[in-house]
Structures are given as structure tokens and as C-alpha cells.
Image (tube, rainbow, N blue to C red):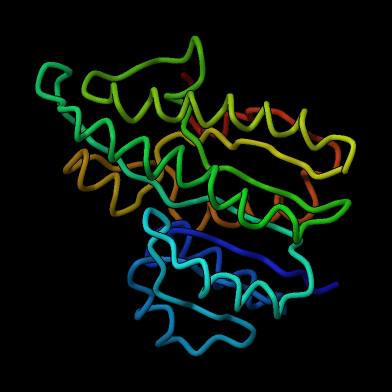
Length: 225
């Protein structure tokens, strides 16, 4: 059965691959990214790829597309921002920009869309293993990892707040995935998981796997730790 799906951070990487997979499965997708020209060039059936900055949202533009959906089945908050700097060099601006994208904008997009969700709707927040308590941490990621920890707690809180409405909220705490963001933060590092393979997993979770899970932070990594 076709679903109405919103995905952020779709200009490249996991988000880009997610849109292609969902479109191939005949779903209707609203793809949000500051520059979606590459995605629009694919002319995918059922996909509206609009230029949209989640940090400075155009509410009228968003409302226009959501209104035509007649309900939202899946929201995947995939957009992310990563700064890799020693803590003493990490500025207040670095922290603000990281939390704005990874936490505050996620909360505000959920707030803007929650009234269009119904029983069985599903919100998937793309987090990081670095934001999981007790996991291995890496120097230089104080802003990024702490923001993902905040996102994980937000996920748990919203799952509790909306459990009576049977709207699911889960965080997928990903290990390293070969994306432009990873390449920029860690030049030369080669992840064992491709964006396409991770997108396949997320797609399956967002449409089927989530049904028995709510309010959880799930670590997804092909390596230990």
C-alpha cells in the first residue's frame, strides 16, 4: 500500500538513496533539502523534491505540500550537521549550528507535521552511535555527539507523549556510513557501509520494522564497537 513520506537531507547520501527506493516502491515522497536540483533531475514519479531549509523553514511552502498529502505516514529526519574540531577550538557558533540542525529543527518539523499524522504513523530520527550513552566516543565530536544524545532523549520523550495516539518515534543510531558528510569530517576514512545499503535498511524499518518498536534508540552498525 502506498505511503505518504517526508524525508529531510535529500541532496545526497542516505537521504538521496531513500527517496529513490521509496519512489521505486510507488510511494509519494516530499523530499526536503536546501538544494534538491540533483534529485529533481531524476524526474521520479511521486516525488516532490523542493528546496527547503529546515533551519529557516518556509511554513507556507511546507503546508502547501502537506495539505495535498491527506495525512503523513512516515517522517524521516535525516538531515544532519557535523563539526570535527578539538573541544577548545569548538566555538559557540559551532554548537549552535549543530544543535539547530540536529535537534531544534527536528523538533520544529515534527511540531509542524504532527497534526497530519494518525494512528500507525511513524517518525524515524537518524541519530548516531556517538550519541548513545556508554558507546565509544571520538575526539573532535563534542558538539555532534552531544546533539545526537539530545535527539535520542527527544525521541523517547515524544514516544511517551504520543503513545495514546499510537504514533511511533524511534532513533536509529548509525555507525559510520560512506557519505559526503563523513568524507568532509574524516578525509580518507572508508566506512564499511554504503549510503545505499543503509538506506535500504532504513526504508524497511520505516515501513515495516517499526511496528513492534516505540521510543527506542537502536544502534545500527556493522562493526563492534
